[in-house]
Length: 98
Image (cartoon, rainbow, N blue to C red; front, side, top):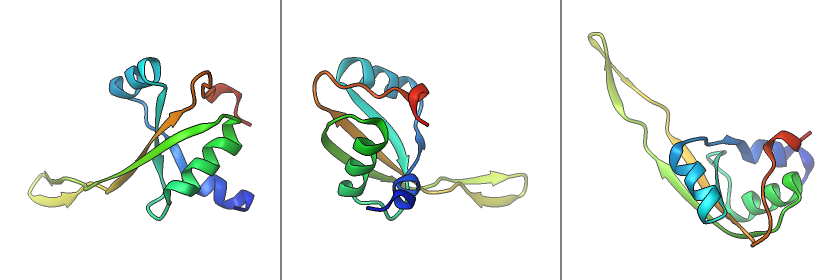
């Protein structure tokens, strides 16, 4: 996979209480990923960008909610998240990425 695609696959880390708990207890990290990203691409991107070994990747699609904004209907954006399980002893350092 070329360097351009690596940066397109991982959109951002998904920071939440659940994500922080998973990172501490089960060594899993959650990332927002591109809508066309595959498990293999996510695994390769995390391994190359963060210099860690990935054990497993699970991907989930979340449909955007339909909400009212005043008198008008609107829809939030759809989201695709990847739960990345790291091999024991590895950890992602978000501050050290260049």
